[in-house]
Length: 334
Ligand SMILES: Cc1cc2nc3c(=O)[nH]c(=O)nc-3n(C[C@H](O)[C@H](O)[C@H](O)COP(=O)(O)O)c2cc1C
Image (cartoon, rainbow, N blue to C red; front, side):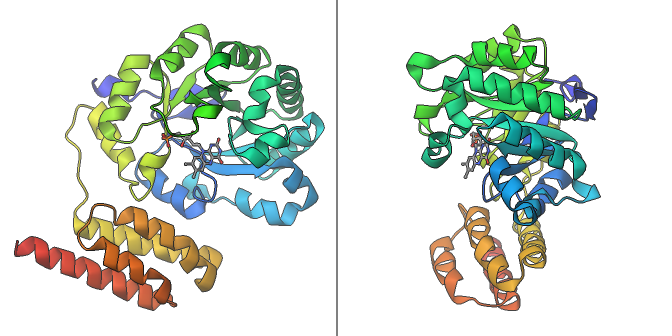
């Protein structure tokens, strides 16, 4: 692939500068995480899924999930729900708060979501899915996307039917995660079914599933011809994946973050999280990120085991600095 591979494209009226998107990740893709992805070149970031019912019942609480800032824009907000009227009301709120894209979740496999008739359950209830998309489409003029899995299970891989229905209802782009609901995250994502969906539709298709390295992103885009590549777990503890994939798409060699690069980003991420949630909750939130950031580093088990004992930001920052100093020292003298 060449420089041409980093094309700008559109979701409805929204122009995007490159094919890379950050996946909605429940409990993870909050404002600090999205800002870091954005800084590394991601074209469109997305909130975690927000319950339409929750948004209507307790707007204040759910609205925290919708908070944004100019630096992360454009922003997609994802909602989920089973009732067309509630989804339309929630969509209006999302438009009011200034999101750039509205995304409907039709792929979440979690039992409690599916039991309520939303998420991936909509793949098996196309009548309801259609009503939801139509009501939301009528309610807002925002660019609208839908995120689906390839089907409910291997016998019901109906992504072509679902996506055509969504396109006919006026959706501006469609994201396909190349696994069925029943496959969870265990098996390899099927990029061929994403490519088939791309061939079948007129609207842009965004592919998702196992884009965990810059090489995978380049291979995916060249194999499928999709307009967008959505990165989820590959960005955990690794915001650099976006600039690395962009460099590779441009035919350039990509930068591998040094220990010092990592230390700088971890400390900044920590401060952003604490600023957003306060010290106690912020430190709790941040533990998972430290674990992801230190994947593959020496002596990480001992460092990670100490995490619950550190109670203040300055203690945690100090321990991070000390750990990285030790790693740098080992690198110099090994
Ligand atoms: C912890 C976690 C939370 C997720 N939360 C959401 C979500 O809120 N909405 C959604 O549509 N998908 C969600 N997903 C699915 C991801 O967006 C993505 O489709 C999936 O991880 C496959 O992409 P990947 O292989 O790049 O991770 C979640 C996945 C994980 C692992």
